[in-house]
Length: 410
Ligand code: PMP
Image (cartoon, rainbow, N blue to C red; front, side, top):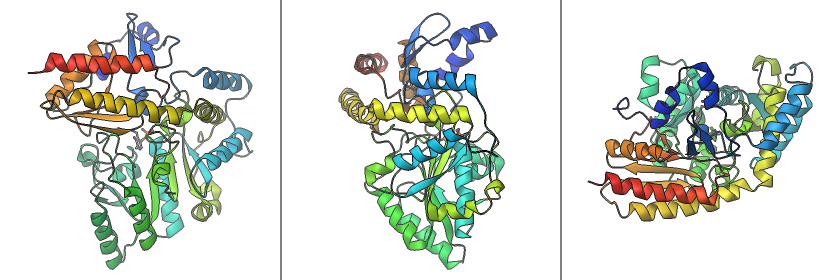
């Protein structure tokens, strides 16, 4: 069914073949929350580059910082300390929860998860993991083993890395898995979860889920690895989702918006106790480009902007408003819309029927609003705009949602 219901965003990006036109396509207007296609049409971006534009497109501060640095020194060598890598690590240590303070830099989210898996193995001397069904963690063989969706996994089975999958949100099942692994002498090294399952269709955790998972991890000596690649950097109304539940993971995975939508960048942040095992031989695990100078300055500038412009708080306020308004509209179409859920500016709109879901996202597209379909859940599309989205744009999205629903009603 996915092929028939391909997200209009894909159609849009495949429209151009001519390289000059391709370049025209990426010449975004000044706007921080929208972009212009080759015909000059302006689209409100509710995809946010799949969660990378938390500070908006081409935020002038991030852009200028990167451009200034590019003229001075773009890359470092791992054999000398790059001051920006140190500054960024310190900044991350300051803004992440609890005692998280050792940082390892990667180039992507999948690499961050991969690093977390290796670090957890080394720190615990265990090698079995538990993740969740329908969860998404990346395409590399370790992060793919953690991923919980047949669509991504099946062609590449079996994996060397051993993962069991508990139903997302099911604490009893997680307990049973941890217990059964203990009985057979394969105690879990770690439990890896997305606080909100993004790719699976913005699936919300039950109340206190992270706290209960934290407790279980402590009980069984497994590390809690939180994949905040998508929920991090202010998206859900706090800098990190973990703060909503006052939970400190052992390893936090970051990427996507960390580089400000300008540089590819990922990281894991771990506690000293957990990271110790990586410090014995620091050259055993590293990426040539991980923590390169340009990515670091982009991330430093991005964090400054998130804090200065109070973007996590903004995501909370605007997200709540959007949820309320969208739900009020959906209530008038009870046969079409099944559920609208989310936190901050991470919103999932689920329809009873994927054909209707596609029609609505296509209708929004025709009205110059881009939303993101989910591979994991074709009945649901994501609303994930830059956290800088203007009130007037938010209202246009809401009004257009109403208009489009009225047109598809049958
Ligand atoms: N974890 C989560 C929660 C993600 O959403 C993604 C990307 N969608 C990844 C990991 C993988 O990140 P990347 O594509 O940068 O490898």
